[in-house]
Amino acid sequence: MRSPHKQPLLASVIALLVLVACSEPATEYRQSLFIFGTVVDLKLRGVSDQQAEEAVQVVERAFQRMHQDWHAWKPGELSALNQSFASDKPRPVSPFLLPLITQSQLLFEQSEGLFNPAIGKLIALWGFHGDELPSGAPPSPEAIAAMVKLAPGMDDLEISNGQVRSHNPAVSLDFGGFAKGYALDIAIDLLHQQGVESAIVNAGGDLCVSGDHSGRPWRVGVRHPQGGGILAAVDALDGECLLTSGNYERYRQYDGVRYPHIIDPRDGGPVRHIASATVIDRDGGRADAAATALTVAGSGGWYQIARRMRLKYVMLVDETGTVYMNPAMAKRIDFQDGVPEKIIISDPL
Ligand code: ADP
Ligand code: MG
View 1: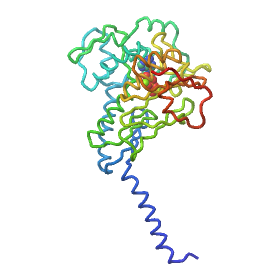
View 2: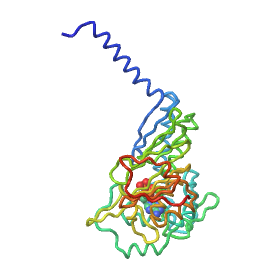
View 3: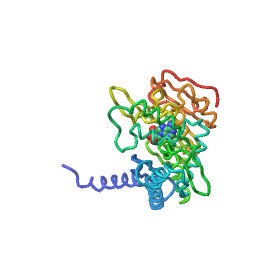
View 4: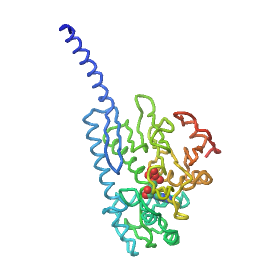
């Protein structure tokens, strides 16, 4: 039989445990948002729950606007702009969208055209402008070659006085390789504006951090190219972003062949040789664009592109699991579940 005297003691132990558990959220506030078709996890430290909640609401509203106005194929500002490229007429672009275009022009140039958000029609041709993954046979080589020949590029766009025109009707903007990183930066800025100094905003392994975690750097994971887990851990410092482009989640599968969603603008075909590229940089948009460009550049070309883009920390994983890194990245990477069999360290960047 249970002693009646023990119950108050048990109750106070439980109360204490609850108290301990409850004191945690006071130092770390967590919330997940579902946006851009993915879950974005936010952790905020050093502010009250109420401050944190309000700050997250501001971020959520900004994310919703981005999702609408930067969408490549659903109605919104970007798709209206894309339609306007059929003619050579200039069209006013809002200050919300314009920086994506101007920054992408620079990143296009620095990446020697490997990061090329002007290839929206090619990405659509491969079937990646839909909520569902494409199925069935890939597009014909003729259709791909015809698109490549039209050579849409960010240098076809002319920007003046807040107006944009395209000198090439084949241009169609798709910021799928850039917007997430750029959005993460904005999220951190919005948190700062609301007095949140210490935070992490994590969109499925693509993340930016601010401040630290009780005097220690934020410890974050690099996505594994095969099957959802973590390949390595890294200490992310105040103001850094870590972005990974992967060919392992979004692809078309046909006749036993995978056709992933990162497209080489030079031949119009999907990149198969590289499974993932990871970049750490203080600029989220740049890191995202760079990770896409390095995936396209591949194991033979990444070093040159990384230098041209002035990147400091780069890691690629090819389809056989071989890892390529620059020495500064190698120093920071802490492999989980065993060190990969083959690691190739480049010269310093
Ligand atoms: P992930 O979605 O795994 O983070 P990326 O950041 O590389 O990978 O984004 C891939 C998306 O970028 C594609 O779905 C497409 O919308 C767009 N894209 C594909 N190829 C290119 C390219 N060469 N340059 C710019 N954007 C691209
Ligand atoms: Mg990218």
